[in-house]
Length: 190
Ligand code: ZN
Image 1 (cartoon, rainbow, N blue to C red):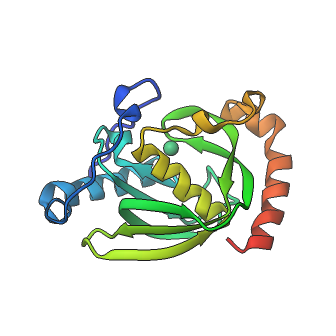
Image 2 (tube, rainbow, N blue to C red):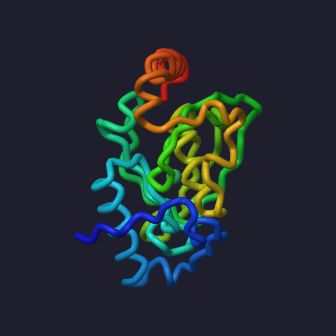
């Protein structure tokens, strides 16, 4: 097990576009180790996902997993997913405002995300995957894939007045957000 140090906002690697990995690179011991390190680091930090950029490697690899997450208890489960060279395509114009956090940013804030997306990526064995994601799960995918382009959620915050520390979010915003997003999850199913 190797838990990496998570880079904080301001580190230049977080702003670099990530490099596409070849099939040979995906199968290499270095990239397989990177994937394992990402999984360990995400779990140790209670993240819903993490991108390779966040442990200092600007390549297009992200991992996601949601079980019972204490940071985001309202998020529907996501099985452990390794997404390499992912491409996101919105399926329609439906959007939802989600309050997001990030392991690299000590704030939360509201961003608009597509509700229905198609994702195409390679798994850790290099096999192509083509799936549809919806709701908060689609939001998590968009957040993680943004990292691979050097984009952070704060770049997409539509109203800076929604930015809050976790403590202030808990005190002033959490109850209303959880009520709204729980109804959304019940309607969309994910
Ligand atoms: Zn993040």
